[in-house]
Image 1 (cartoon, helix red, strand yellow):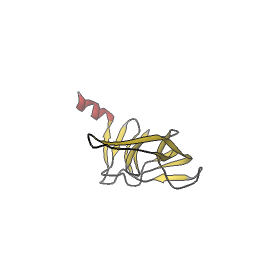
Image 2 (cartoon, rainbow, N blue to C red; image 1 turned 60 degrees about the vertical axis):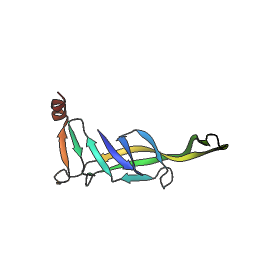
Image 3 (cartoon, rainbow, N blue to C red; image 1 turned 90 degrees about the vertical axis):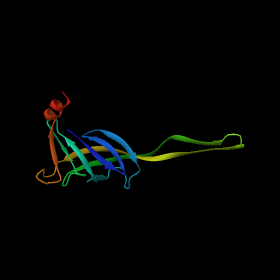
Image 4 (cartoon, rainbow, N blue to C red; image 1 turned 90 degrees about the horizontal axis):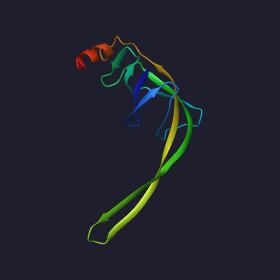
Length: 124
């Protein structure tokens, strides 16, 4: 079972027990976070797609650590003008381990349920 969630404007695949790095989130290591912007849930048989999000569904995860990525170099140049600038920065991240994926009520008119068998038939 997995879910596609929106964290800070970016989409991530959440699998129970998996760890991912996302842009820095508020909270200390060990804090539980709940993500309500669930875009899609697949349980192996059925896929539920939100319009735009699934109501009542959520994914919870625990903050493992905060840190900084490798340095990103930013180099600007204009040819034949003698203009060159080199700059860089290290982006902050938060590593999150996902604990649970909760599926809301699928009786809402905002939810579209698709079985993977129907998708396979359409591809053929």
